[in-house]
Amino acid sequence: MSNPVYESSTERVQTWLDASTLHIRFNNPARHNALSVDMWEAVPRLLRMAQDDDRVRLVVFSGAGEKAFVSGADISQFEDMRAAREAVARYEAMAEEALMSIHDFAKPTLACIRGYCIGGGVNVAISCDIRIASEDSVFSIPAARLGLGYRYSAMKNLVDLIGPGAAKDLFFTARRIDAAEAKSLGLVTRVSAPAALDKLLAEYTGAIAENAPLTVAAGKAITREILKPSPALDEVLCASLIRGCFESADYTEGRTAFMQKRKPVFTGR
Image (cartoon, rainbow, N blue to C red; front, side, top):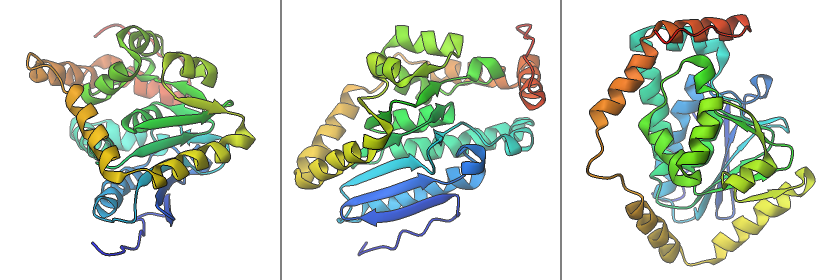
């Protein structure tokens, strides 16, 4: 593909090419860059274009404004998109396609995080190769507060990145952590003062622009081979457990409580 023009399919995802870096910015600041359907759908197409564009050495994901990278799912679509079984299946497939398009992208990817990085925001970040964050960033995986099923691919990315102990800590408690703790766990690589985040990002865009693309690509591909799942993996069991969460009374309660801004009362049913 020769010199494609990176026009997003939605105004809630902004794109621009700066030298050898393609920037993809989530632009839903009124909802702290919560991911709506059109935002999920925009990502795979942009990455397909970037894959065949020799100008692109790095893709950087960020969030518009100073308050959030991505704060999770867009709650205005939560009831409609995730209530019925068919809607759950569609939503999960759409999110999975977007996240796997990031994870499987052959060139380096970097999440530049400032502010809230919650739920789906963490999933986007851990699908990237590198994560940098400002000191005022906040991280959380609130699935257990909502009764959500959490996809195998997302859990594997988390465990591969920070280990099973830390992953279970964050997942079971749904607690929020600051950037310093995120760095200590290995969830992010480097942390800077908010005013210095652009300078830190420039360090990465400059270094990757200068380094050998084939060597970098080979390193990424080999790392992926190292992290491939065991042949003993029971994918059917994983899918069944996730489906059971979404079909439970607890999921209905979690979704309802979320919309009503109250604490859920879960029964394990």
